[in-house]
Image (tube, rainbow, N blue to C red; front, side, top):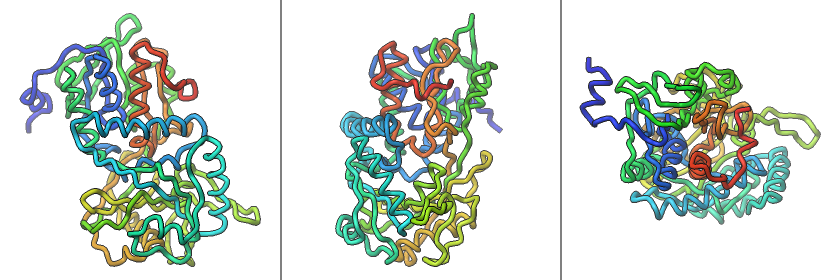
Length: 420
């Protein structure tokens, strides 16, 4: 069996020194590296597996503004959406950015009440979002073959979009290399080197890499990376893996013009209860309405609809939200519940062929937003815990972290995202 170090050395000569080392080459780490490289910083990007191996390659690829918490986080998401337009022009790679809007479907009066309150708060935060009726759903997304009769409306935002995350990763990492940096795959970090209380570098199976700045952008692995420093702040990083399973269909003609989520998806994402008109709480984190299609979603799956179509024509159908360990296996139970839920809302899916299924681990932060910014260790930064918002928030995360590391004042204050 060939050792990783032997394999790695056969591919390239290690780049020993840089201005910044970033652990994790998902969309967050790659975006930070890209914006740093634009500031003429030499970047080393380290990934323990391959590009897109983690959450960035196992997602629905949506850039959804509606799913964000109103206030500062939503403002950042809006800026991130603008930055995607720039990236689409800047990168020497077609990232398949499609700006067709997005909907959050509403299936009953309790969900309508929940979404009206949510939309009102988001409108106050400056988001162009509104509640539309059933007729407008089919009028706005005119290529949809059908939507179930029990769907009574949707929240619609024209700024919602989606992108090809694999092509995005390639475009970002190519530019890092073009700007003098190094991207090292299959290079896990084994330990962190400190000297006089400052970051000096990292140890990998391929050798040591040196830089005065180190960014922990390793997603669900962020707590373990931080523990290498053996400091008390690592106990403050509460990030848990939250598995999402997604089903992929055969290639089809254009049917889904934009991103589609359900209200159950939003409630599950934020671990919220939906209160009906009589003031009773319904746990929409996990369950669907049985009388509307015999959906048997169990409490541990957190099933909510996520539907989008790739440029090639494959429809991505999700998703679950399962807390657990680092297991990324897919399950028959997950597939059954995802498909029952999806077909309950879009009956046309019953006649579509499935070609595969995959899952990924969202880095869920119990504080509800990611950890962004410096730590008590000089030169050590963290950018992790985006849950399902990694794709949406990657550009703005990359930009503000690059500003912070470069000694500039970030566009947005990071006080609310501090590890403390």
